[in-house]
Length: 364
Image (cartoon, rainbow, N blue to C red; front, side, top):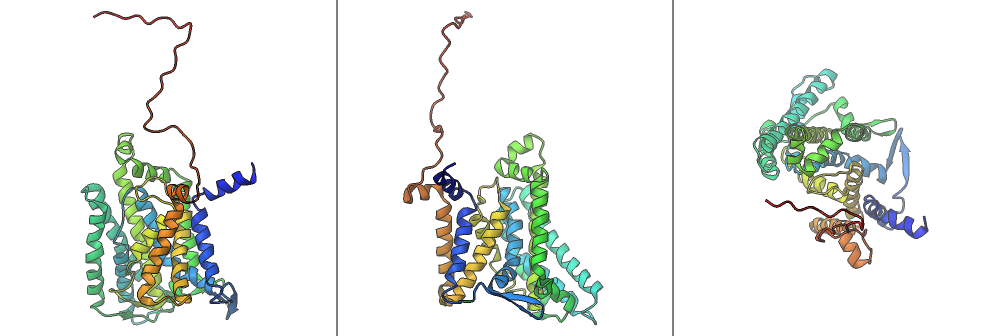
């Protein structure tokens, strides 16, 4: 294999452009922050810009991983931001009512209540989509709107603060010199990869997203698969809600997880997963989430005005998506796609052999 062919194969890999953009965004910060790549040890904890990117990007990675499986089935989940708010509100509300907020049993019970509520939201979404046949964008829009109201009812329209060291560990604590949330994200991603790539679950999800009716005809229970992925997506959003409320030691039903569903969808698309469903890439989703978080950090580092940061973010996302498009690369860079038969070409009948016996026509 020549150098040119190796380079061509590398640039055609689905993770090449997301990783290239991630590296470019990291390098952009160096002129503005010379010690951007430095990592220091303070009080037994690692600190630095790279650590902060992973720390603050952990909730987005979790939500994006769950969103990936939903999108792989041909759906979408707009309710994850509301689920984040509901989980944090229920958990912090229960902890704040305890006489001793550092009691482990009370903290675990509070987290259990929040996660169960998140899974129930996912079950409701899956029921509407898979059983009732409602369009996913409409079905999940219900909880997206109503969920914020539920979180506001739980918190009584106030920001609930807690002072619990065990609960603080989830989103703001450290373990083995690293933020504890990194280990939580690593565990969730590892379990998801093991279930979808080491078992038949991933193939079933892709088959449902590729053609749900054909999957049903061959015996795949597409309804059950869809309900399961919506529940898993809500569970990931619930864990992200625990992280966000734990990091701030407070539950804000109005702003917690606000617009995180849009960032999660962008992360999935940047990672190379098609919104039409079918094949998905969990590794690409993780890289896409890091791109979004790095972009947010870069915006504040280079001093982009706050009122224009969303426009700046949208412009970068458009560039990444265009670079991933084979048609765009072919027009701009002259890259040639793989050659193959045209889909609209008529099938060519094979020529009969010279010694083939003549066909006998039967009169009716």
